[in-house]
Length: 241
Length: 105
Image (cartoon, rainbow over the protein chains, first blue to last red):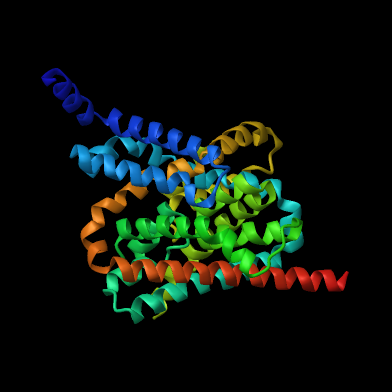
């Protein structure tokens, strides 16, 4: 038994622990998700996060130690945003055709998401820096952190809000679209995917990609548009007021 | 190719976060057919594992448990409602445009 404890202490102190734990837990969560026919509530991001957070709490490994390993995965978010250029390029014809509608929907939707978050946050009496961290919540986490930093929010909290927002979108998108009677034809999938990418960034897009290829592509597009719009507009608006 | 975009974007001090500039640069670079194949392979690989990349940040929620305990319910309420608002507004605006196009045609 002492041998095992020593081994555990050694392993948990190396960066490899965070990396391996993340990958193993994610693969398991993904397998469960596939097994359950991709039910929205079985979202692999949600369950990986819950499992890993419980694992860290139980084993007493602190977050910085975990992150020293997991940062290798986290780092890939930057290149993943760059990689969004590819699905955009692939759909350049549809893009050129519908750019007005897409741009209008992204702007109005983004403002609605961000504005309602600020207003509601202020109404329920959250502290100012917390409210400011809510502003970029519908943008993918690494970008949200950058924006929050610029407007006086808390970057780490902004990342958390972004992740939770993504999960809410991925979990409830289907039900909400059903309620709004959005069809599941080609146009319907396009609108559903685009809305998920706009309001629930990468996690919504990941969900959309699993459900329907067109929805996924337009979610990726929306996520890219939202990144550009939000990183341009949010700091600008805050400088004005 | 991608790291080049990253490096370039980090070097330029613009109001966009680095990766966004990288994306725009890559979009311009895609006009050259030579880069298509390696970019497609790399991009599809990265994007197919997109949800995995959010896990490390997500686990970071646990570092804010104090703040969450204090304001958790209100924060959750704000996030859920504003996310629905964003989803609904986007999808309805796009549907309105689609319907108008259908009527024109």
